[in-house]
Amino acid sequence: MTVQEIISALSQYNGKFPEQALVAAREHWALLVPEINMAFERAVTKNELSEEEENFLFWSVLLIGDRKEKDCFESFMLFLDQDDADYSPLECVLGDSLTEDLPNIVAIVAEGRAEPLNKMLISMKAGEYVKVGMLRVLKHMLFNSEITTDYFANHAPLWIEVMVANQHSFALAVLGEILIDLKLSSFQSMYLGFAKKDSIDHGMLSNDQIKDWAFETECDCRRDHYGSFDIMSVKNWASMNGNNEWDSMFMFNPFEQFIEEPYMAPKIPRRNDPCLCGSGKKYKKCCLN
Image (cartoon, rainbow, N blue to C red; front, side):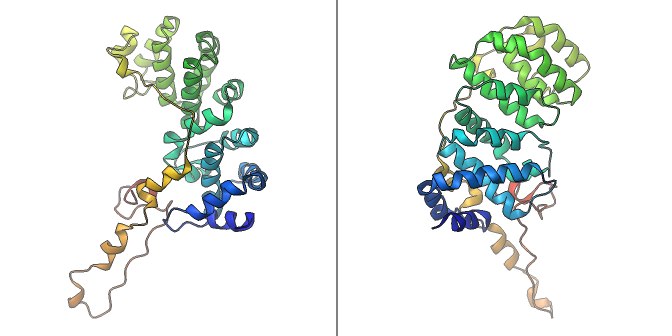
């Protein structure tokens, strides 16, 4: 496959894992990197992306993790520095990977560089889930002795200020969990105030944990292990196995014999369309899986 054929294949979504295109992407990686960088840079200037652009960007993010591509780091971080709320361009591209895979990929391509992650945490544009990802990567760096506890002690006040300004209650809770784990008790009074004002996500960090400034067990504090990503593992995702339950669901109509007009199956929703079950979620985050 040529580079353009690879891009075309990765831009089309049919519910099946594009293994041939991904194998070709690995083989022609040096030629594909400039195209990925340009795709990241173009995406920053757009308020809305086409479905083809979303698909290519999705695979591009996973590919730079798979290839450990440090030369895409700058454009990648520029792409991440935007809102990640539901139906935002970034959320439409990454979906569940925004929380499940992004931290690992950032850790891989950052190669121990903490300052770009700090800049993301003090950005007024970056979304909450992106910031949570940055926090988890920094924590990973700490346990790998790439930064020290002092890094959190010195930078957390400004991170907190930005999170409060943006009402990022979940990110505040994740940061609080890390500060407790690091025994940085100087932040306890601040977090007691957040708890009193209900400014943090209590599902992530409870009032008792803040009052005790400790966890009952080590298991209460999340440990992440980053450093490798195999794009071929995506083949095992439910949304990539090619078995679409909607096909059989909509083709069966028990009342068809009583209807004079032939039964017409409703249109199968696309990845980012509202799910037909009425949950209010996107198809890719609901019945597609």
